[in-house]
Length: 115
Image (cartoon, rainbow, N blue to C red; front, side):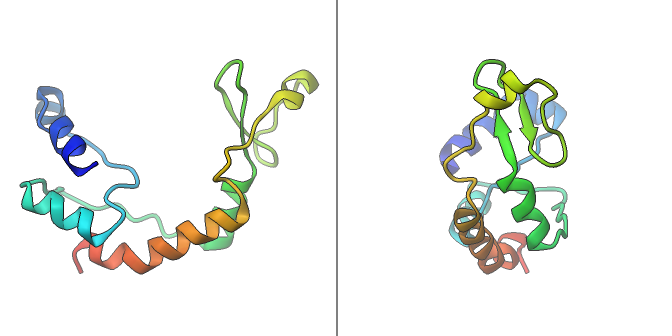
């Protein structure tokens, strides 16, 4: 994955316009590999959101397989019952899996930020 990211960031549009990595690197090893490859960020954005809010946001997320539109069952539900009936939840958007991802995030965030 690190090689793929490095290769993409080496393309002209990233060099001329800049880039944003969302959710990568996730581990100290990935961060180290990027640094060794010469990839450095100008800044690191950290959105400090309570875990319970993140869980609520992820667990309520649904996708319409026909249109690809993303809905949230609490904050942005579909108006149409037919659309609501066909919505799908990603297999990793369960509360249990989100909590595991958050634990991994908390364990690695300082190393990824370079602190």
